[in-house]
Every structure is written in C-alpha cells, then in structure tokens.
Amino acid sequence: MQDLSVILVAGGQGVRMGGIKKHLLPLLGVPVLLYSLQEFASLPCLKEVVIVTQPDDFPTIRMLLQDLKLSVPVHLTAGGADRRQSAANGFFCLSEQNGLVAIHDAARPLIQKEDILRTAEAARKYGAAVLAAPVKDTIKIAGEDMVICQTPARETLYAAQTPQIFEKSLYAQALAQSPSSCTDDSQMIEPFHPVHIVPALYPNHKLTTPDDIPLLESLLSAAKSEKKLQEEKKMRIGHGYDVHRLVPGRKLILGGVEIPWENGLLGHSDADVLTHAVMDSLLGAAGLGDIGKHFPDTDAAYQDADSMLLLQHVGRLIREQGWMVGNLDATIIAQAPKLASYLPAMKTRFAEVLQLQETQINLKATTEEHLGFTGAGEGMAAHAVCLLFSV
Image (cartoon, rainbow, N blue to C red; front, side, top):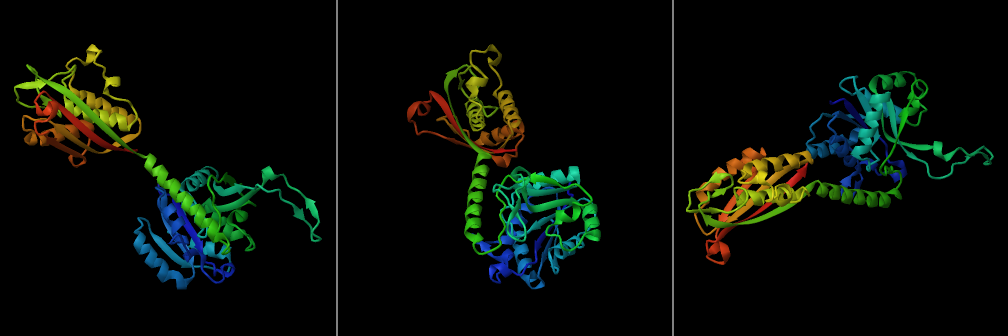
C-alpha cells in the first residue's frame, strides 16, 4: 500500500555551517540529502517525495535526481521564512491529502529504513508518531538567575528527531490552528491529539555545525559496513559432490534423464549422481545437512527412489527456510558416454522441478582424460555449486 508521502526539509541557508548548505555537503563523497532520500526511496509504501529547498538549489538537486532514477514522483518547492512555513510549503505540494505524511530533516543522513517503518506503523495506528532518542544525561531546568529549579525524571525524557509522521488530515488541522513559534511539527499537534514516541534503534544525529562532520562520517561508514554485512548474510553459497560406481544391469540416469548405455550407476536410489550433487549443494547452502541425513540408504522408502522427487522435496525445504535459488552450476565427470547432447534436457528437468528459469542453471560434462576411477570407466562423479538468496 503506497500511503506515505515524504517532505524532506532542506531549506536552511547554512548559517551555523559558515554559509555551506548542509543538504548539499558531501559526506564520504555523497551529498547529505541523498542519504535520507535513498533510504525513503527503498520503502514499498512510498508514494511521493517533496524536497523543500532554496530555489537556487533546484538545478543541482534536479541533476542529482536524474542520476537516482527514482520510481516515485519527486517535487521541488521553495522553503519559507521558518521551519513551520517550509514544512507547510511542502505539505501543500502533495498530490492528495489522504494517507500519511512524513516530515524529515534532510540534515539527518543516518536515518534507517527500519526506524522509518516503525514510525510509520505507529502513525497508522495512532494518527501521529515521532522518532525520538531517550535522553541519557540528567537534565536540569534553571530559572533566569541560572539556579536549578527542577530535575525532571530522566526516564520520561526523549530528544525528538525526525521523521515525524502524521495522518495528513491531522497535519492540515495543525497548520490551520497552531502558532508559528513551534520548533517541531509534533508540537503543533500535541494540543489536540496524542503523539506517540517511537524510540530510535539507530543513531540519527543531525548535521548542525562543522564539528558534526567527523562524527557523521564515522557513523555513516560504520552503517555502510553493517549494511554490507547484513546483505552478505542474505546470500549463501553451497557445494555438492557425489560419486557412484558403474555396473552392468542398471539404468543410467543423470539429471533426471535416462541415457542409453551399457552400464548404469549403482546406488540405493536411482543413483543419479548429478542430481545428488545438486541436492547436496542446496542443502549445504541452506545449512540443512546433506542427502544422507534426509534420505538415508538404510531407509527402504528410498530404495530405487526417483532422485527428481527427492530434489523436489529439497526445493520445498529450502523455500520453507526462507531461501530462493539464485543459480546452479554443475559438472558431470565421466569418461563415457558422451553427454553434451543430453545436457539441455537435464537443464529443463532441473528448471521444472526447482521452479527456476533455465537461464539460472548451467550444466557441463567433462572427462578426466582416462585418469582415476572415472577415466577408467569405473564410475562417475559430479560437482555442483549453488547460490541462495533470502526471500
């Protein structure tokens, strides 16, 4: 459901940055604005984006947007005299007034997808939600004479951040009746509607002065490394290897295809050495053991079993574990018979059983030049490698 419109507020003149516009400042070589824009763009619920900025920044931002090739509309509008007016200008640029609006400081480049989604979910449930960080320091309230007059309980204190996400109807009401002195968007809604806090899971520091740059670059670098690690966890590689002896009086079945030959492979099942290697690669990548664990040769149920049915079961197992096949690459090692003409039919069988495209499968056949047991015609071997991705 695409119900989230986003306003990225980037209308400041960079006074505290010595005249440098924060949203265009490169951090690790990437303009600050693009960090949050790309994070919001990854949301399936995103409907549109409005960037509120100074008109003289429009050409630069349009150029950046061309390189991104986003799949949702992105509008540019001019900032106002203060934060409230800038956010209002962005709000009135939205294409419709249904759903949710998220208002985010473009100068917060560390925002993570998970925190956005959690805040949006709270806004759907309660109408208004704000990402915030628990205050770790003890806060003192002082009078005009700088004498402490109150120490609020630290566990009740949160530092408001962005995004702040609201039902659009609530935000429209807030703009109509709230004073311009509010320092954040939720403050306009608090007098007439409860605003729920969503504790931030990740650092979300704001770029305010040049002193913030080293910290932000360090945190961005760490976040990039963590994201890369998580992506790697979503990918698994598996290897399978199998060997069977050639004997007279057995059918020769490879990759689910029966091949006319004077000898066949000996085994408890149909001894399809290629399919067994493929199954072991899939099970290994998913961390599910091997075919001996799932289809032991001590179990009469698998006597003369069709290995393609066993492969179908393995495919179902890895899907149940949340994995999908990226690709398979396998090699049959046999001195004879010549197998090249049978490889397309084997590929078709694998594709049908594993519900893959044939382009995801590569099969090869080779000999060992009369060396070893395969070269002597005593048996066949197969290697298989697969790549799995988490669903």
